Length: 289
Length: 289
Image (cartoon, rainbow over all chains, first blue to last red; front, side, top):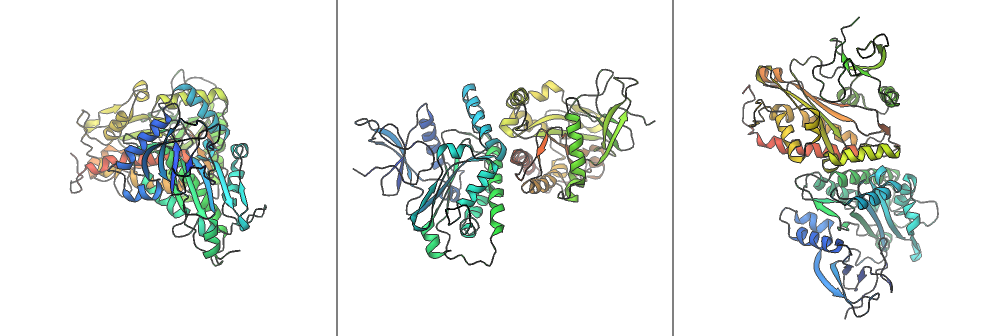
């Protein structure tokens, strides 16, 4: 029996506990996401099944930007002993990172599929307006940064929900800063955001696909950014920057139309991150600071 | 006194009459737009004043994609004799076209500025969901095509409002077809959509600006396409294709954030038009058909 446990690096969504279902990892590089209630789980499963085998999805896009899907599995849970729950089995996107720094960003000004029932639209719309979604085309759902000496900085739920435009800018700077105080040196911005396979480069590749793809509309999906603080500090390299799409419980068929809602939010995020990058002098060494 | 009259080529909005205010032209290349009620007129005027002189707006963008603004003028109207009404004085975007073909497309999945009062949000949201705005990121507001012999095809209000995705595709094909029947030969697509200074080329230039500009958010603005059916038929040229933004009563400050809502809709429109262009064999002569 694998040693299932909640991932340390989880920054958004319910955390698995005695009372609640939540994602689990087993230390072998797999991530177990409990099938959600109210058909959402079935819907997400159907998306993974369709997407994994879709001939029109370029392999490069699937492999680079999506977690690999390994089917489903009944997993024993703490919340309901003796009643194993079906889980999606996915790659653990942060496996192998010694000090994973994570940023979860829900993309799109609109988070409800157009075919949604009225109460769901009203609920989502209220959240989209209260948060930065309508204004910025995205909102931060969670963040975790590991600083020197292994100190962990993370945002709690109410704090994340209350972020305004300036707060979002601060989080995007904090995510690539080596210090935990208000200074925010953005010491890792050049490596993490601007590197050859850094966040910006990957987001731009993703954008090019979204300008063309008309297969899926990714309502309420997130972009998960990950890098290894230890690796960046040790080598001055990019720390294995990862850019992945997650959370597909509300994906809709594209029916020949591009996902303008996701694309618009993605372009906005690219602009926000680009605004941070030029602050780093190009000649600055990228070693630990 | 100039000879004010409603423009023949108007495809959206109220038409000037004995009962209603509406835009007027005077035959000298100017277009008079009555200031709208409920502060919208003042708001649009304020936008034109700010935009016309904004140092951060590239001259090339302003001159290519926006009507030139010539201040305001009190104009006598048929609907209220003896009570001249203030009008915005703008370039008539279709001046000089012998047989103007016009397509008015309201851009954006969201047409309400985030700061709007609740009833206005509800009203706009309902329209955005009933029409194709939420689904496609844009909706057709009106179309007028002049065919051989000067026959005019135009859509009426209820018909335009009821367009679904397939209907939008038909209108975009009809706009560049020389025949009025259901055949839709798209005979002018290569010239109008794909020409060197055709619609696609201009929309892509506009898109590049929207990826960067954070000055204004163009809620509820439209892109007006225009070309001259006579010129295309006579010369096989592009017929002076025009791509202009209009209707700025709901423009909001950008505050350092890109207009992801307009940009997403613009990208969707580009994809729709691109889908039509490859149908034309590249070797086909562009002469009259």
